Length: 151
Image (cartoon, rainbow, N blue to C red; front, side, top):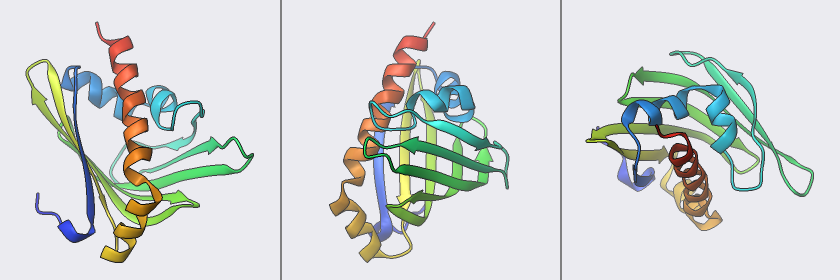
């Protein structure tokens, strides 16, 4: 899948869990609520229609009392391979596309997460705001969930 690299931030991880389990963690609301936010913050799943054209919306109350809203619409879903969605993470990020790509690697899962920004300038601004640390901490929580769920 060709990416506009000057507008894309990519994070690669290998999760020590089978692809079916990683997919389940990404696609079921009860799992998403446990990992889709930085440590110490609870995720409330408001809407979760996991289908092409379906919308999702998650709210995270921040320590300062404000709410952080993540929402988007699924544009492509290929089971155990990829999930592509439009996304807004208000108040910090708007108008991006997120791509979650899954690849089986024995009993592990190779995972690539792409955030495609409308412009290169916006991508650079997001990098300066700490997008890598933010998503890194979220994926650490996913990793913990997978370790604790693994059969």
